[in-house]
Length: 132
Length: 380
Image (cartoon, rainbow over the protein chains, first blue to last red):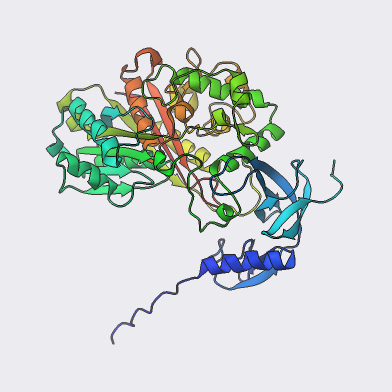
């Protein structure tokens, strides 16, 4: 019996997946990521393939709005963007860390930040009342 | 299996060369390397050429200019780790017995971008959010200052050391010393990093000849044995992790020490990846030159400059030399080969017998680094 013909592999439009995820975040003001149906791993932005188990059954998942600032910086020199601009790594929980724009000044490590939206999309701002 | 040895090296001074193509940068070092190795160009059996921004067939474009062709030529990209990956491939080719005489080249021309931060792959969502390499390291620096008993003065001290070493190195792009005040007052790039805490933009090329034991004995040249050559890639980490604990470097270093049969205390000289001064402090810990938390002490006490226990970046490192991405890893091997064979003049580390080279290639979301290459070299 002849061997089965190899069927073509699927191309993943991952750029579109990411863009939709970021757009949905900007539209709702909440981090719209994915959760793997097989192993439960969560991610932001949305993933077409699970980074932990390689599974391809990913469900849309709302990761909320708040996190803790792990570190941040203000970029003062750029040939592609207006400066200064600030970005930071925000820990949503013990599984997800997100890099995002920061709006405002005077951030500190361990600040609680939350998602907001503006004309560029979405960003993090410091939740009023700094934790000490 | 045979051992592999570095028996010759050459390098162009790193700097700005607007009138030179990739071939223009690399042909000089390649010819000098072959001449010093006493090897005719027709004796080369394989070439590995590292670059990140040279375009298709960069190795072949260089080699055709000197009439070398026919043999296997492989172009290598591993970002900032590329030049060391080319040496790693040369090492593998020799120890396996496939080839006896292999050339490794590292080259890049960053001035083609007109200055500023390096272009990273735009598909990456972090890049879309504004991530650039200085920003990544700036965040690492801010976290370091938050967790360690250290101050911005310690970051400045790394740059002062680098520039002091570089002043003695004819291959360095920056050959003037700077004071701590000048480092702190230099142009802010990404807080808290200032210009002099970041490596300059430049062009460069280096070439290294790797041969088998049989050829080494025939040539009778001063040689350095490649006691370990370890290449790792990063593992994706999408959640919270410790930015002060680069696992890729720790793991690669552990493997390298095990293969070479040494401990970090035995190192006389190290060339590590100081693209930003914070990196040097973090890598002191990750390479086991000190315990976690002790890195600031090392720079303050002069342990890592001439006269100290282990001289780190006698060449001036990336901070003084510049960081033409694909060239840096190869240039580190050239420097250590010269250190181990007593050819470094007034930047000589006295009695250097055991050396380590370390470069990490970065720039991808979810991977603190994409690649890490570590070599241990010993005087043969």
